[in-house]
Length: 137
Image (cartoon, rainbow, N blue to C red):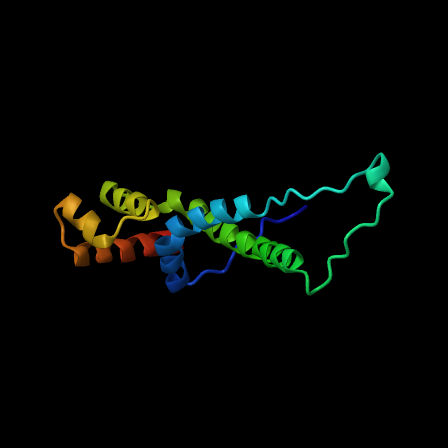
């Protein structure tokens, strides 16, 4: 039986994941779009018998392909962090905390959230600390 692997997160790491959630989602979208490389090799006809270009290390196109392929690891790391936050979202109770968390995951600043809720940004920071405690517990 396979066990679901979870990250061992600290409160600071979880706080950072919540803060970085929005840009990680956008970064994953962009990096996945970059990973599509449209080069193909002919399989039939006279083109199949012609010599193929050797993509050595000095080839700038090959270097670019290698650089983009390294993004696969970065995407996987971001996806783990996003999934960790998504698994813990349901632990948050209280209407105010849920709303603060949703706006933070949407990329809103504490100052913006405070203005829209009629609270100070330090009060929002306190709410965020409460959210992290609830998610860790």
